[in-house]
Image 1: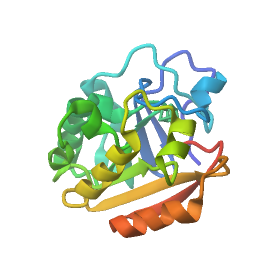
Image 2: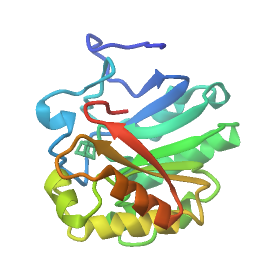
Image 3: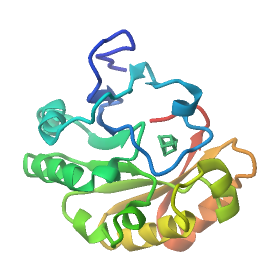
Image 4: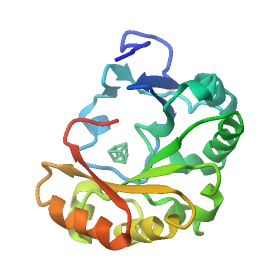
Length: 209
Ligand code: SF4
């Protein structure tokens, strides 16, 4: 594994590399307040990278952090925050790196972008976003609310609707859920993904990124 920064660095980490993929640390802001989030356990460290941001990186800084996009298996918008809170900015970066040969551009998201922005944003992703990894987190609203503590009502239904609509515009849509959280039924989460016609990936607690 290639690591070019560690938690002793004074400079903020805009981009970091894991397994040939380039991750962009878009924002620290979130729509959720997940009880299991490393942020709320006072750690901002993901696999050796300190992802604390004093200020969100600019579009130019994110493009610079990608460098030559051809070299990466994938470029991933993530955080320890929700990248789609900066939807226009990440789509601008995505369009730029796609025209310069990015192989796969992915967003790791809570799936609440349409709820937050008040419109169906999935068509805007057509042509520049290749993959979405959406945190389903729980099989029903009650369990979801308990673990993710969304700031907006209707979040669980909104994320399912987002995943359903995204299929028409984004080639690869995957729901994820964290195994090991109380009350989370991984098989039921997987069944939801199957019903929606999207992929599913089980994540392990305490492994973000
Ligand atoms: S969405 Fe991710 S970063 Fe935001 S609170 Fe939940 S676990 Fe933390």
